[in-house]
Length: 97
Image (cartoon, rainbow, N blue to C red):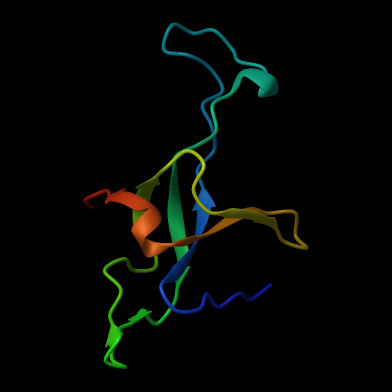
């Protein structure tokens, strides 16, 4: 499925939640934390400013980002893939490569 986000929105594929704790305890699905980091798979053109110009996006495809726990809108593709659509401002940080 091809999705193209509009304006200042991005599409993020959340990274998988940890299966076990640092101490080695295996977590059941019900106890796993909702992931807060993911990989950006698509970005929009940018935010439309009041003067009609477009502010370019700081985030690029392929960036690994950290976002708020309840940020974005969850969607499921036909291929049964979980994705998030969120605004660029919902991203808290970009991991350096």
